[in-house]
Every structure is written in C-alpha cells, then in structure tokens.
Image 1: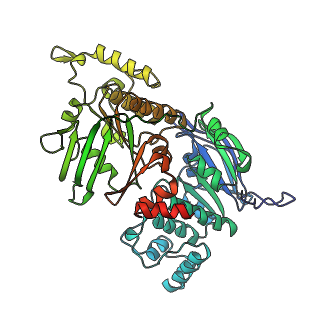
Image 2: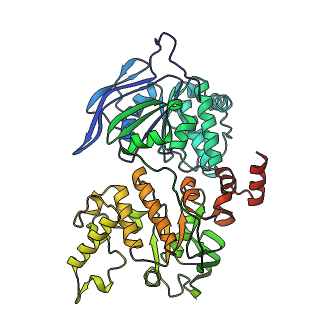
Length: 527
C-alpha cells in the first residue's frame, strides 16, 4: 500500500482540504448532511457511495459549481470562500470531469491554454506555454504531442489533456469524477500510474468512483457516503471491498455472483456478416457473425463507442441493418426486411435498451404506463376497444413485487423512482414476458450495489430457465461475472471470442484495444 504523505510526526501539517459541516438541500432533497471530510496532503483519497449518496454534489461544492447552505471549506488550513470554479482554481483545486471539456478541433496546446490567455505564463508568449506544457508532460509521464488534434486522440489521451489543463493552471489538488468509465483496463492502469506520479510530486488527488477494486488498488484513504451523510473514513490498507460495500448499502452484499455452469442447447439467435450504419452513413458494425444458444449468456465487451450500441439496437429492431442476416430459431428476422421491433417482440425477443430514459421508458408516464410500453396490444390489457387499467395496475403491482421495485405504487410517475428502481421496472416488463431471447444493454448502469446483486441474479435465472441472453456492458467485472462466452468488439468488428473460464481483464483489455486474440493470450501467458 502507498506510503502516507503530509501527516508529519507532530501532526502539524495542515490537511490539503478540510470540509466542516457542509450542508446542501435542493428543495426537499437533502443532498449533503453536515459533511466533515479531511484529505491529507500528498495522498490519493477515495470517495465512494451509491448513486445519489451526495458524492458529486460535495465535490461540486468544493469546485464552486454549487454553494453550500452551511459549512466551511479550508484549503491548506485557510478558510476559503469558493463561489465559482475560478475561485477553486485560484486556491489550487483542479477538476477532471467525467465528460471532458475539450474543443476537439483544437490542438492539445490550444486546449490547455484556453481560458488562461491572460495568465503569467502566456504573457511571455505561446512558446513559453509550450515549454511549460512539455515540462509538465515529462514530470508527470503524460506523453502527449502538444500539436496533436484532440479529436484524433484516444479517450485515455484526451483524459490526460484534461489533467494537463488542471496542472497548467497550477492545481495542487486534483479531483477526478468516475475517471475510468470510458477507459480500457490498460488505460485505467496507466491513469493510476499517473496519479501515483502526481502523489510522489506532492500533489493531492481526490478520486470519486463506484468501483471498489479501484479504491483498493489506487488509494491511501477512503471515505464512504450514504444517503447524503458521511458514514465512515478508513485507511485503505485496513478495509476490504466487503466492508466498504456494506457501509455504502447499509447491509451485507454478495459481491461475487455465484452461478453454476451453463447448459447450452439449440441456437436461438444466429447473426451472419451483419453491417450497421449510423444516421450519417458511417459503418458502426462491420461484418459481425456469432450465435447465442438457449441456456447461455453471451457477453459483448468493448470500450464505449465501438459499435456495441448499434449492434444491440439493430438486433432489437430499432435500427435498420445495412447488410447481413439475422435468424431467430432458424427463421430470417433481419430488421429492415419488413421486420421491426414490434414484430421481434411478437416472436419472443425482449430488449432492455442501454439508455432507459431515451429508449425504454417515458419518465412523464406513470409506472403502470411504463410497465406496458411495447406490449399495449396484449389481450390481457384490453377491455373492448379500451385499455383495461385495472388489469394493467394489477400486472404492474405483480411486476413490482417480483422485482422489488420501490415504492410499489403503479400510479407514481416513472420520473419519481430512483435509477435502480426504474431499471428494475424495465427488466420486469421484459423478463416477465417469458421471452426466447433477452437482449440487455448496460443492465446496471446508474444502479446501486444492492440492486446490481438483484439484477444479476435475475439475468442468470433467465439463462437457467433455458433462455438465450445477449449482454452488452462496458463494465468488465459485469461481463466476466455473468457471461459464459465473451465476444470482444473493437472499431465495429468482433475481433475474437474468449470462454468465461479463460477471461481476465488483461486479455480482454488488450483485445478491446485491437490486439489480435492469440497475441493477447500470448502476452498474458508471458506476464
């Protein structure tokens, strides 16, 4: 574990950050409840908590996006009034956002200096700024060409540009919000090496993440939030993922899914040379061929944006196929050849889209309306020429009971449920139709640890009931935990398949970056 910094034998060194009694409400929502937090100088400090626990609100207050209703912020022992990001930058706080704030058509150098054109470094000219940028790159092993166009860089390199921007502005404290969500495992490892270098140079890092494995690997200390309150502080070396998950959720959580071996039977889904173009005519899926059998879960792994979304949408009938054939139980059901989403549903295909708000529900609808979307022509929901709302309410109440949707109120507006409960309602709607094939995208995106455990068990139960399941997820832990076979996508193509028993993050990560499967396995064998 990392050596601790900034604590001195006498304890005289001031914390890099100290928050005292931070309180924040948004209407009826009490987002932060009298939060106290100390972050020692020269350490990597993790903050974990379920969605809605208040982590991002707290960091937004520290960075000046929001002002606290009560409480104080101290940086290096000095009371600070942070009323905007300019104030935060002035006291040495930088933030690397989950969604990068970069101009993609500009070179790296212009992105880094954007917004500080009147600063001391730039008064000496752009050449001086270039020298400073190159010094920062060398010092922190960031390795970026200052003249590269940002839009041409990989996501991992774009993230490094964001870190450079913060350092260029004089950041001594760096806040990173869910920084590995869009990275391959290798890129994430490189990021953590950079953070370690920052720490060695005396910088302080605050890492917000829901990935407990990253907390254990990268941090010195960790603070846990639950329902707006700070519930625990731990030295990372003295805690475990099990303890942290229990502190986050308030009860014991099974972190590793226990499931038996698959018993695959006949092929349900057969895909041959499938090509899918986006609205601009760009080919996003390139000659994909694979099958999914009854009684197995096939996972598709890949960094976000490599064609998985378009593949899933095409198989669900909501995007046309450009070339290739899709067969369901031996029958041609290629979307675009007179086959749409409604026809696929009639033939036993259920689809849980990746983006529940855009494609799976209308948040202004009630839960009972959301619970029949796509299935409103079911005779069970009809009463003459009208919908039978009593039958629909009863069916929704049954779904809510079966899938532990809270609150169990069919009349409540869908927008008023948490993300995890919205997701469980969508899963209930699709799974309780008893489909032949379940297409499921990002099943636990924005879902808390406790609900993740429940959702994973239901997906495995589908497999064990003899159903075919195709799973798309950017979370490698999820893919490795659930899938029996794993297909890896890179730049629109399926570049290889790995049996779940042979899968590990290094092999999958190399393949996700475009390395040939045999080469990736050989590299892993040498390590």
